[in-house]
Length: 329
Image (cartoon, rainbow, N blue to C red):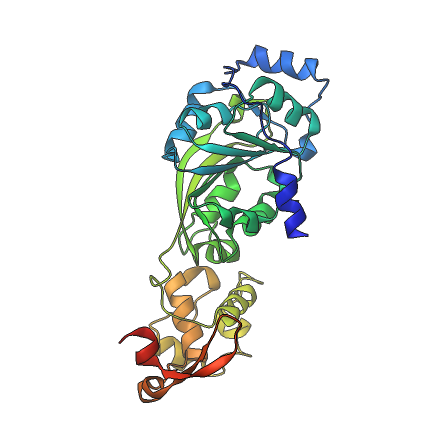
């Protein structure tokens, strides 16, 4: 239950004392892992960042202030956590491995640090609506990065910024532009409500143990809800899913169940009749959706005369009022 989760999250506060400095070099990481008897598991994405300059740079990109509530996914040994705390923010560190969670509680105790020993996929984001300024940072495990992304990007969402370390291939997919190899359904699904910026590549050598591939840092910001045209979002995502189901096929063949007269649609929308899915921009996908299923707009003559019930504190209907009376215009 959500209420039980909210109660659970506060069972892991750090001790009420100043944070201990634990900036770790590679030798310190090896020593700490031996001490807590942890052999890094690739299946859990346990690759520990040991480049302190990079860790500080990553945190700086989030522009954290004391007013922020920062959620850190996969806090590990605290490579980013300490730098976040130095910014004056409150931090919720989510760490699945109990040994690492205990290490953080012992070596990085702080009155502004809460530690939650849980799989991030089981975290309930609704808890975050209790906080006004939420930012999310983390080094996402490669095997579940897509699932975590979609979980924490789903709407509605109180998070104002995501700063994530991802597998480089995933970062390129999220930030891709049309007519590129990396541009796909995931790109559009994320960019529909967010702007993604690829900040920098990160070599495998800055981690222990070294992963098999390089990583990258991306910054994700929410779009203004009015930035893109209205659309039937369910239909839009359905068209995108079908369009990218066979990348080498032309859209005229893949979307024939939705658009019988493809040549007319292509001409009206200024789309290449032989276009494949990756050639259409997000705006063109929205235009295509709205051509197939135009968004209905209410008749202003009806909305001005529309009436709303007036209720008391016990929701008993007392009467009605027009839209202009309710909204004052």
